[in-house]
Image 1 (tube, rainbow, N blue to C red):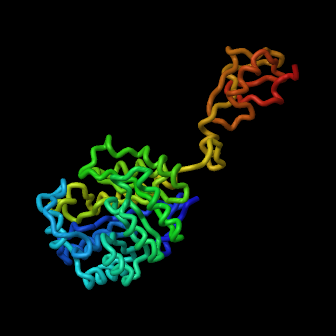
Image 2: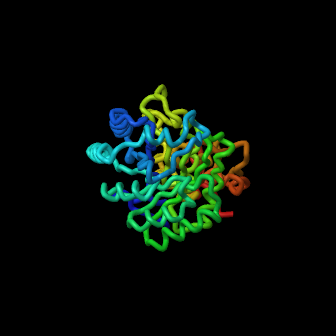
Length: 345
């Protein structure tokens, strides 16, 4: 089974899903907001918070392109929201003090190198960089596990990135993702997890979700997702392009609890558990007399039926073959029949 280590946290089919609170740029460049979200995530029981690392001059040229979920150019937005290295270092220390993993998505070589200096446990690569193979190779060369989102990419364009990660010898996860903000439920396409698993059997699977609820993430767990990522906000009233697709601390707490419960419920076979015996004792039916039966009398539906509890020697399944047999002794009403009560015909 595919597995990777994010710090000391194993991630794979045998382990509960790693739930990632994607703080991203929901802080809008305000360190105080960022630190509040770290605390709120920790209080919600999360194991991991993730930010975005933007070194704008190394990431993009000046432009006027406006994302579909925003009302300002991406260049201006990133200039406004990018956190300096000193703040990221403080956020990493804060997250670790609260017992959480700190991850971030680098959008350039300079950003990846900054995170390497912070000694992050793993790198997250966003969907937009999935087919940016030079950047994928640079990040893979840093020698840490990689969590790669695959929105806007098909198997053909994911394959070169996976090959780069394999060649670098780093563990990797592939997150199915739909890059629509918000994503309508019918366009989540959880069936893609099976396709990714077939194409990349050495990858841990996950879901990076942009719907407005936690339900797709919960539904992905039985399908093999072991990394679950959603945008996180402390307050839905805050401004920001990702706020509409963000979950609150209370929703994340429910996601953590629910995903762990579902994981615990997976597997097994349709066999009777030893722990079910107390229920069997009262819930099963045994063959019993429903009228007095005299010695030598034939057992018929008029004097024999099935009733709880299931503590009798002969269970309901034996009833048909007992009809027509003769009693070898007098039997009272409501007597649980035994083999010693009937003749060997």
